[in-house]
Image (cartoon, rainbow, N blue to C red; front, side):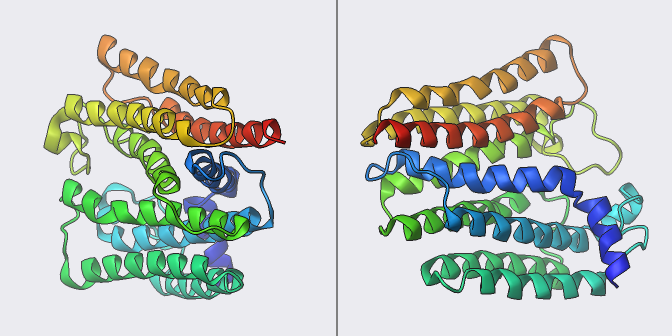
Length: 300
C-alpha cells in the first residue's frame, strides 16, 4: 500500500507544486486576515502558522483524494492517465490515507481547541458532501454550477481555519473586519477556479462552466473575482492600526488576469491561459504576507 500511495502522491499531488502552494496559502491566508482585522493590522509568522501550513498540506492531499474518488467514473473515460483511474492506487488505499490524515491533522491542532473545531467542521462538511454524491449521485458531475455552490464553503472554511489560527496566536476573538480576509482569499481562489475552466471549445464530455454560462460569462466571473478580491482588501484594510500604504502592493498581481483577459479576447484563444491564473493566486498570497510583515515592522 505504501508504494501505491507514493505513486499516487507523485501523480496526483506532486510535492514540487503542492508544497509551495500550501505554504503560500497558509502564510498568505493568515496574513491577509491580520491586515484587514482592525485590531491587528499586520503580523509576523509564528509557530501557529507553521502548524497551520502543515495541516493545510495534509488537508489538501485528503481533498485531492476525495475529488479523485468522486470523479473516478469520469476520469476513467476522460483522464485515464491519473493514478486512480489507471489502477496505480486503489480506492481503499485512499480511504486509509484519508483516515490517517484526519487523525493526524486533528492531533496537530488539539492544543488549540477553537482552531480544532473549525478544522473538524471543514473536514466533516467535505466528507458528508462527497458521501452524499457517492451514495445518492447528487449533485450530478456535470451540474457544474450547483457543484460549485456546494463545494465553495470548503474553500471558505479552510480560510476560516487559518483565521482561527491567527486569533489563537494573538489571543483575540473573531471580528467582522478580520473575517473579511477569509472572503478576500476565497475570491482570489475563485479567479483560478473559473479561469481554468474557461474555454470556447469544450472537449467531448469536458466539465466546464463555459458549457453553462458561455466562455465570455466564465471569463467575466474570473476577472470579476480577481478585481473584487483586491478592491475588498483595499477598502477594508483602511481601518487597521498599521500604515496603509503597503496594502497597495496587492494591486500588482492584477496585471496577470487583466493581461490574460486581453490575450483571451484579442487573440481569440481557445482556453484561458492557466499560468497567469495560477500565478495571480500565488502572487496574491505572497503579497498578503509581504504587506503583513511590512505593516508589523512599521508599527514597532
